[in-house]
Image (tube, rainbow, N blue to C red; front, top):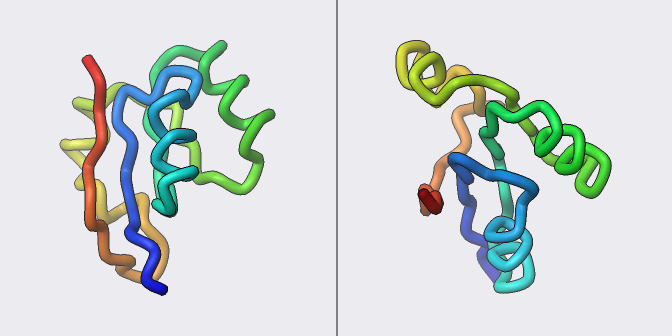
Length: 80
């Protein structure tokens, strides 16, 4: 079974990402600027690639710079 890959922007503490994980998605990157939310994400999901950064910086660099081995992304997820 193929697991779809997702990038979570404005991840917060990861509620939406956890729901997507339960639905079978594989979180490749979670981006959040708030240090307390990042701390929560890293504690609850130590294997996730959690990036503490402003999204404007991420977009300047290009999201592919944060992926391993040119992984394909199927979904960009965000809740504003």
